[in-house]
Amino acid sequence: MPALFVGDNDRGEVAEEHIFNLLMCLAIISTAIMIPVILTFKDQPPTFPSYSQEKNSILQKHASLKKDIIEIVKN
Image (tube, helix red, strand yellow):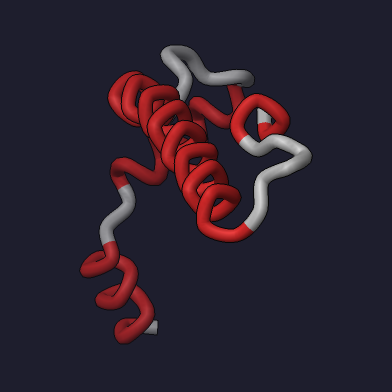
């Protein structure tokens, strides 16, 4: 892509302007790709990869820090 913007004979301010245009073009393309990815990215897959991971997930949902601290104090 740089060859499309910056020529072999570019010097000084002309080269700076062409490099700036190159960087702006790359920033726009990257942003255009990033926005749909951020909007559609999911935290977890729709199903668990294994039974044991599903079981651990269920156990973690029912776990309570308050209950654990009370149990530790009693012991």
